[in-house]
Length: 237
Image (tube, rainbow, N blue to C red; front, side, top):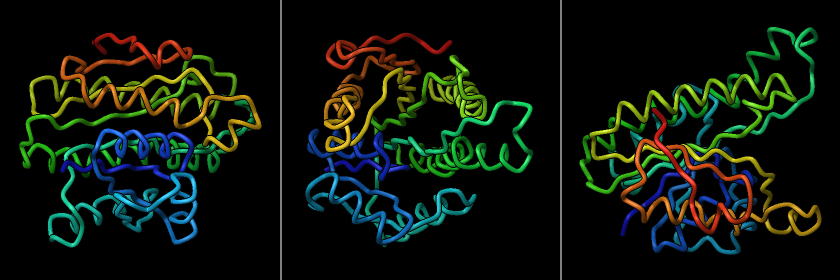
C-alpha cells in the first residue's frame, strides 16, 4: 500500500490531505511538532488508523531531512507521495510597519518550510523510482491579492518555487502539481460554525490529483465548490 508524507499535517489544509490520502486507500506519514499536535490531528480525523506520526520541527532546515533519514533507515515507512501545505502565519502588518525580524519569521514559517520539504524529499522519490509518485504543493491566492503583504510575499515565492519544481519534474517519475486555493478551508467542526469550506470537502481535490496521471507540472485552481468536483487545471509554464 502506498504512503503519503504530509508536511503541515495538523493545519486545516493538512487535515484535508490526510483525509484524502486515507480515503484513496493510502496510508499517511504525518510530520507533527509534538504530542499536542499529534492529538489535534487525530481528533480532526477521528481515528489514528492508517497514520504513522513522525515528530520533527519543519521550520528547521534539518527537520524533514531527519524524517527522511529515519525512513531510509527503516524506522519509518517508505513514502511514494508528498503533500506540503506548511504555514499558518496570517498577520496584518502593512509594508512600512513590517520589521526585518517579522519578515524573516513569515518567510521561515510560510515559505521555507515548504522549500525544506521539497529539497529533502524529491531526491528520495527520484531514487525510489516509483512510477506513479506525486509531489503536491498547496498555495493561497493571497500572493495575487496582496491584501496582507507579509503572507502575500511568501505565497509569491511559493508560486515561483512551484514553477521551478514543475519544470524540474516534467519528465521524471514524480508528478509535481500546485494547488492554488482561493477559498477559506477549515477543519469540519470549525467550518460548520464559520460557514467556510470543510476540510473533508476540499479533500476531493487531492483525491483526484492522486488518481489523475494526466495532471502534471500544472496549477490546479480552486475558486469555488464546483472546482472541487471538476478540477480546473493548466500547465505552470
